[in-house]
Structures are given as C-alpha cells and as structure tokens.
Image 1 (cartoon, rainbow, N blue to C red):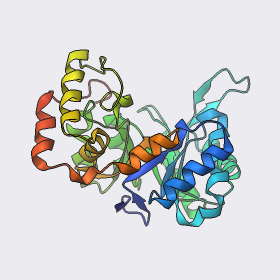
Image 2: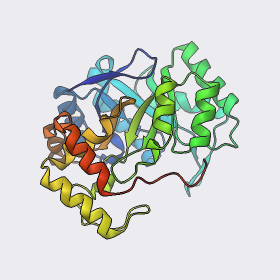
Image 3: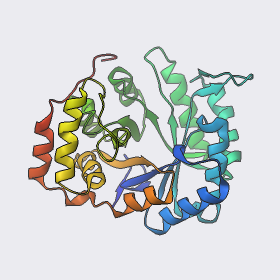
Image 4: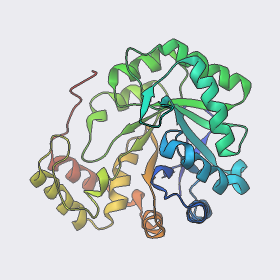
Length: 293
C-alpha cells in the first residue's frame, strides 16, 4: 500500500480509502471488515453524519476505537436531517456546523476528526462563514484538516481562493473525466489534494452489465469495459487510472462484504502502464462539466 500526504496537512493517507457508506448496519461485520482493511494497510476511513442518520458513524466509531490513533478518520457535515425524518435540508451555516461536529465526535467515540468535509456546497452558500467554522474547529483541536466534497467548478474555485482547505472529494473515473478539463490542474496548482469517489463507476467497468452513464451510451460503456477486461485486473486498472494524476491522494472505494474487500486488496493499481493508460483514454472522448462552471 502506498501513502500520500493530503494537501498541506500532516495527514498521510493510504491511496485506497475505505468508503464506509456501504457498510451494512451490523456492528460485528463492520468491525471485522474495518480491522481487516487496517491490517492490510488501509489507514483512511470515510463516513458522513448523513449516512443512516448517524448510525454509520456509530458503526465506524465502534470499529476503529482500538486503533483510533493509528488511522485517518474522515466524516462530513452540511446535510441536516429534519425532525420528522422525512429527509434533509442543506445547512452550511457556522452555528449548525459547530453543533453538528460535537454530535459526530460523540457517535465516532473520539475527541478529534482528522478530516472534516463539507458534504456538498453551492455558490450561494455563506462560504466565508462556513470557512470560519472549520478554522475555529481546527483552532480548538476538534479537527486536524478540512475539505469539501464537490463536483462544482465554481464552488471549488471559491474555496481554493478563500480558504486553507486541504482536499476536495470529487467524482472521477474512466466514465467521468470531467475533472480533467480544469479542476485537477487547478487543485494541483493550489496545493489541494483530490480524493476520488465513484472510481469504479458503480461497478459498470468491473462486474456490472453495461448501461448508459452520464453522456455515454450503453455501447460506449461496453466498449470501454471490454478493453478493461482484456487488460485483466479491472479493479486495479480503474483505481490506477485515477491515481495516475499526481493531485489524487486517495481513491475512496465503497466496501460492503469480505469478498469486495479482498478484491480491492488484491488490486494492483500501480501496474498499469503509460501505454495502457493512453489506450483507455482514447476509447471515449472525455466528458466535461456543463453546469456550475
């Protein structure tokens, strides 16, 4: 397992991160999977207060308790559940974040969060106010670093301009190359790391039947999938593709079962050659962002 520094922080994260959102609501299974992942070199675990109304944080908190000081823990904030449980509303206000973090800390059974991320964001947000909340939490020692989870170029530019964020989590894969147009280089120049999500494109390039995805047709997805399987190790190739850009520090992969974990651990993302990378890039034209530019 390789490890990369996240932005300008002191956090060193495994190039493969354990996406905890996929975990089933079973404490024993969650603990077994997380401990197995840690034993095999994964030190970066990602959750959010939104997932299962906080239960996911409780699962993770219990599982990591014996190894808390040895791992990098990430969670997210900004989506506020309604009291009647009918859904959630977007809330990036400072006062909400300062209260929400304490609830996350309690559920996670820890007194600090390594990476605290805004779980979304719009250009209409009170961005400076949100940044103030994160900076205050850093001063108090409740978080070690902060970032945002966003695919919106206009939002990302404002955050890199106004804040000291260390990371941006964004969707990036062989079927979603929108970040390549401008965001990856912009973030690299800003010394902000990228954490990828959706790296396996919902499994369409691994083991799922081809279907349309974003602006690509079913036939186009199938053509890329065919090439990937000729290269063997489709999981490793998918992960290797996103990690090939130097700004990407880690790829978050959702893991639910023991078999999925073993498949991820067996992947060899560094084995993809420059020649094969170019072949993969040439199969489909890169897509670009159409909104929030």
